[in-house]
Image (cartoon, rainbow, N blue to C red; front, top):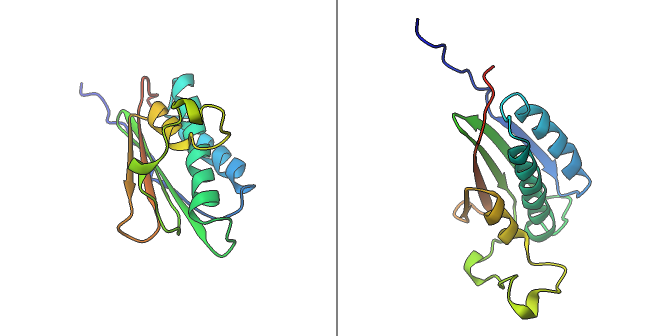
Length: 148
């Protein structure tokens, strides 16, 4: 007898204003969406931290807290991985020109570690500036997934 194919949910798509108070709301919605599919507590924690960081960057640095600008979020469960895409309406930046947060002169700074954290927690971090604004795509390979 053939094994039944997993049916993954359609992508979760959200749009929020550039309000930092929306971050916790989005995190809760994404956690509910992912909970049937992400078995590893470490994976859930990494995804939550990365989502909080990328949303904070989009709101504060990309959209500069401009309430007229929006942040678009897409979360998709695929076989053995989760993709999170976050797009802001900012001017973009050059990820290669960011200060090294591990350099001695930067160790005591209270900012500048966001991209470093994303790269440490995710299996892949991609930036796309071609469509106006910044699109950040995060990929997390799952250590354990749940069949539903």
